[in-house]
Image 1 (spheres, one colour):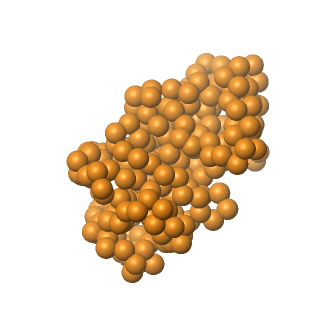
Image 2 (spheres, rainbow, N blue to C red):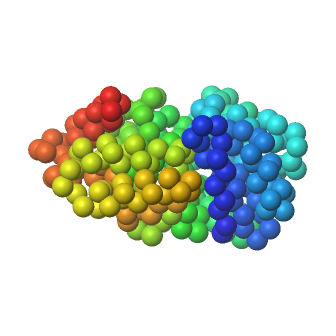
Length: 247
């Protein structure tokens, strides 16, 4: 499976996913960058995968539907029921799967950022939208802190070598926050140095790797004793998220 990051807007990522001649795009906030990526890859777009309904993830759907021979616009069952994703054709729930060019794509419901948030998992790749970022997580808009912490707990059970393709380029700022949470964690210091060099070279920090995130991301480490500081897991996660909101 080939994954091509497609920068959109100020700091969003869409992703062109190619498998055995099939092409899908994840979270197209804009159409033009996606069309350029399709042309460069010399493929036809047949599917759109949506992790949630926010405008900066779905804004390119309608022009892509007009321009491309799309067969599927896939999003969550919750968002389909609410009518929140334009042109949605497939309503997906936790545990569902579908075939994409011979590869199985599995769905995980990961509510918290929104109630309809889902992740797409295939061939060792995780498309996490705005639930899990590199070194961070999304704000809790529609769900609860308990719900979001449970969703992140679900994601951290995936294999350690899982590649993480997230919705935004927030890595440097997230690692700066992580360093305030665990100032003595050498993995965080090393990751921040590497991320700064990567961005200075005008390269993407994606994909991350889950095993690396388990050592550096405070929102996957919220129940580690050094992070929780005696709080129960949900209270620890809540304190972290509230502190990051003000960071």
